[in-house]
Length: 354
Image (cartoon, rainbow, N blue to C red; front, side, top):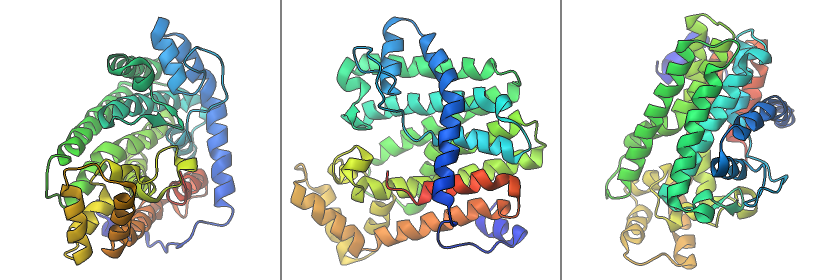
């Protein structure tokens, strides 16, 4: 289903800015989802043996590396909130979807632990990453354990089906393919924007689409509704990644928990970077020269790279595309009052600073 088809089918007119009060409503939706999901997440983590429990709970912000309880928090909880919001939009109740919400959060966090290893990221949410505290081998193993825990949690849901488990596992396979291709980009000199977008649809959109599908399945929704939820989540996933890429370059470290220009330090070929590199501008060519340099980029060179992306149009392109994908996601849902929570979350994905 193309963006043009979705727009034509539903005839939506799109607001250029977040809906009034949407930010406050999104915070409420996220807080409610955390309140409903956290007890089950805690029970699941507590079921893990020995060091696996300690490392998982540390990553989720339940305690420090010694097991002392903390109030660090475990991130925004966007994906479980999407599960519960999709359930509501499909006419279901939170009780039927809370296991799916917890499962999707466990999957998301297992991928973060593994991403940190592959990217050699030292910080996550302002704290040392699992591999920095316990080593690479342990980080890989605890990620695998959380993946297994996610499948078990979903299978134990009061309203569960083989279709839900298949959806979750297929999404994990798809996001692994996206991650493999993303890693392959690091050794390639020439990458197109379309190749990047395809990888994003696999690596990021697959799990957001899965979250919305699991919510619809928990509500026993008919296939057309399930497909609509999948469309929403997948289009929103691209918007999410575009904003994430912008924050990876221009985000405030106090908000993102990562160094200034983190993606540029790593010479990551994120979407704004690739848009700049393929812009056929002098700024794009200068950026390519910086990316090909054999030495680590100095702070001054990182700042210059960011300026070159702006000059080549990469930053503006990413911002415009994030809005376009947001509009594509929400178009089919604008006239459905039961989808209000999904619309608030969609605004929060695009209009955020971390």
